[in-house]
Picture 1 (cartoon, rainbow, N blue to C red):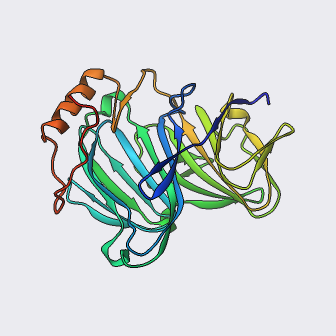
Picture 2: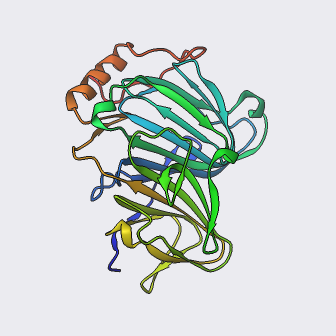
Length: 291
């Protein structure tokens, strides 16, 4: 396993109605490129009367990327955005110096039985842009670049790689690439990737240097430039990574920053209700263990 530097197992936690698998950060690997947090949500079946309800909560110093396989989520934020996300589309919310948002099952689906499954990802921002103005971008599924590479179906969710660029407005050199193999195939991405690279196995399995790896694992490459692996029929994996930052990133609850003092200020601001409000929302998630 000369090119596999680390294997990270998904660590499941029950949060409300969902089984959420925490993948990053990990004790031995806090970030992969600028990716600092990855949650695998579900799969879950929400019976009638059971909903996703995450009340308003704050973020700083990062961009959130929501990508669904099943289900629908209504996003509201303190910019006044109100947008549903469907499977295959991307919600990209940049917190910058501060934003508040909620995530809920749309009202029209609250009396129906539905499946829910997806990824929620945090991407840290470059130090000189951590205090930028917050923003929100929605990109439909059919706007994302898609192509075939040696029998593997590729879809670029964010960033730039292999000569393609996603319309998602990222802040540093990175990539998040979905790969699906209808049959047995060899994904040879040698010299196509850059920076640090991780591979998350959603379904199926991959083989590398005589070893087989299954779902709910992240493989972190020792050298992203030498990334080659086999995919069994029906497998879906995600490659993500990019150029790492020169400075350490600190994380506390929903706050990310290169400066601990900025995080402390954000904690105090949320505790004292100084963040902007989400129009139409009255609830708020309390700051844990503060003051």
